[in-house]
Amino acid sequence: AEKCEGENIALVDGSSFVTEGLKENGGGRLKTESLYETIAQFDEKYVWVGNYDELKDDHNLSPARYLINKILPTPQQGEVLLPIKSLVDIVPLVRVENRENNRQLLGMAELSNNYLNCNISVNNIPTKRSISSKCIKDNCLLVGYIGGKFKVGSLTENLENFSIELRQEIIPIKLKENISVAITEDFLLRCIMSEYCELQASMYAKGSTIKRISTDDFLNISIIVPSLDEQRRLCKDDTRASLTEADRKLLESFEDFRKDMHMKKHAIGQTLFTLNNWWDALQQARKEGHGIVSDDATTGR
Image (cartoon, rainbow, N blue to C red; front, side, top):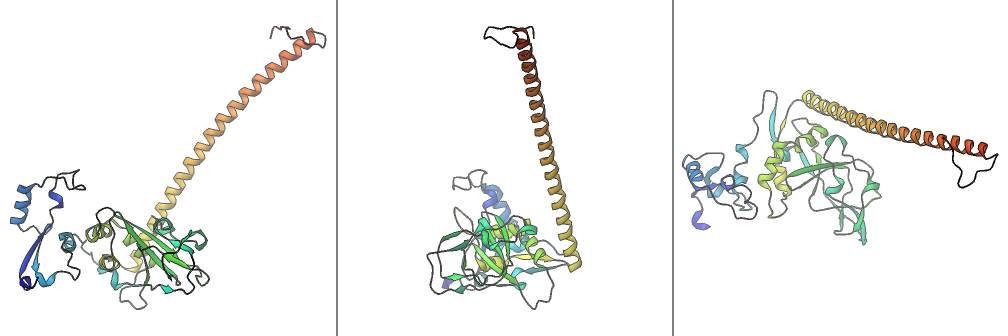
């Protein structure tokens, strides 16, 4: 490493040049001709050229981590592109004395795929074997990332009488008190769950089987922040779309219920009609038998 200091190096992301369907198990063939052509052209989408001293502190040489800036969206008028770390603080966990064997343990299952409906009820957090002596004691936003997708949550209840542990993939955050660019909690969560943020996360992610990102990498993800009015408009549009979808599902559910009731009503009608015919036949048999119906009695009905 000492010999490399001050030297220029190139990192090439060749993942897009491996035959499809075989990348995961390492059995794919490299499309060398296309890759060589890309390298020769110094295509900035796939090739990073820089100085050894510019390598990140963790010395993770995954090229994708150095090419993230190439895929970031371009801010429009009235928007700014900011790293998440400039907008939020990490909420510290509090060491709890007298560690219990079982505590409420919050993980990905308790987070939501919908930022508009992500409030977490403390009473719904399952109790499991304790894994740490540290718990969350402050209201905060929660972010989790596994396998290419973000999920989010919000703790707004009084946590004073609860001991809630977080699984390692859950990151507790809150908006900074003094930031130069205003952003709402809803819009922040909306951005985190956007495709361009998940794309950045996938480039930072580590792991051979299940991809995860570290807290530092999460904080380095950049988001587009428009004006407060635009933030509120976008969230309002999402709310309206969500309600429309909920109404659609409700109507579908009602229609299924109506059809089900119609079928049951028809079946009951058929049953009553059949019973009525049997009753008329019984009455006719009793009349013909002068009040007595024998086992071998027959009737014209």
